[in-house]
Length: 235
Image (tube, rainbow, N blue to C red; front, side, top):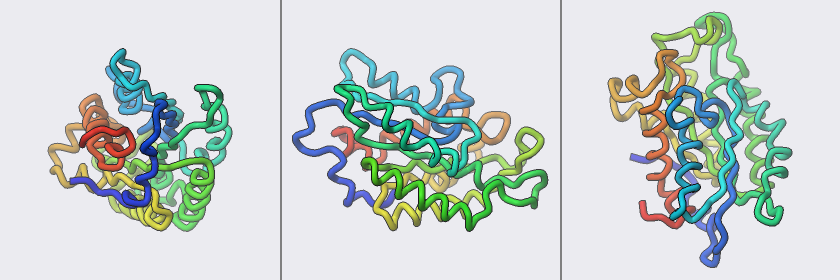
């Protein structure tokens, strides 16, 4: 099962006469950074290494994840990061991969405390981020993975839960749908595989994917129809 939006509108991500390797930047939080995967460095790093192989087409991928980032943090650094990752004759990147929002959903200080980013503010900030990104190049969005609520609080401060995650990810999905940005709904996808499956793919902190989790996330990304079209691979 794959949950995505905007696929048909993004079929031009890779034009038929595209001959050069793609340049992609991945911006977001610890899910992009890869925290929790000491073996492979996370799904973005695993993918980057695949593309560095001698027999690879040689797509260029920059990991610009920062632990703890929320939507406002990513928005503040988006364009500057984008402009400085041109490579290959100083051309700007072809695609931005965004993945952010779980930190915004967290409750601060107590289980029923305020959200790190209040929901109305999140919707406004997210709209600004997506609009800003689309002005730069093609955009795809990788959603958040579910947390283990029984392991909260994280760092003795932040309480993540499925209800808030669902609210924030749905707002993100709908904002992407409105802008015809492809969205990979990992939250629903992982939950659909059963509690024992997704729990076994999280670190002891209950928040970050572990080695098996990031390996699964990479396969979910590569099996996504949107990415199959983007990279000219068969799903």
